[in-house]
Image 1 (spheres, one colour):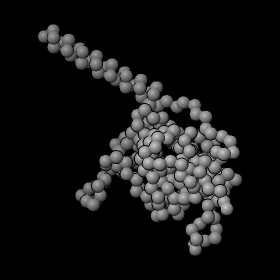
Image 2 (tube, rainbow, N blue to C red; image 1 turned 30 degrees about the vertical axis):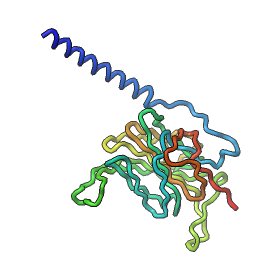
Image 3 (cartoon, helix red, strand yellow; image 1 turned 180 degrees about the vertical axis):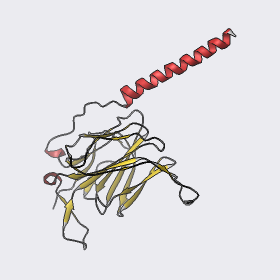
Image 4 (cartoon, rainbow, N blue to C red; image 1 turned 135 degrees about the horizontal axis):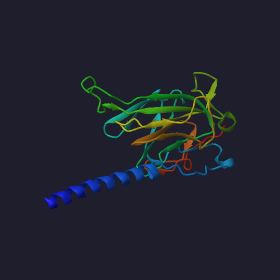
Length: 238
């Protein structure tokens, strides 16, 4: 009996110590928000910096108004791209528990739109052709770049001679089952490059959608640092 009692006490203490370690790790490491010196100067003005810490797991070229982004084995989201540009790039950055989980604005600009979507289960019997049956919780932040810095992007040839603002979109994506997205940005808010715009508290990915008139500076599998790594450089006119 004494041996059994000692064993049970050991198990209880092991669980308590484990929970304490997890709590300390989550609060003081997972949710850390260190000061970041965003690159400044003329050379970096037109750079688009990484909105997240992590690894580039997908780079998708798009020329349609909807992009399908897979996250893990059972998750995906449908991202609207037309409000960014007629064509461009989708950069998916996956974060692990050791990455910084705060997101920062990739450019100088103004928040034009914020759109939040709750995660939901899909009925696989009604959608048998789909390999994904969970749509992850996600939050879209559309940012219009400062015109004097980024200039204007021309519309596709043959459609219009008009031009439109330089837009980028940051999408926060949480785990398939957990709703843990915090958005600190507000519509009409002026953002400086590197300003904090959000936090994802559990299993996460961040997607950056940018127009095609850029020079990509990252590749698949590359690790990037929030507020520091250059994702792309906006091409100068002419």
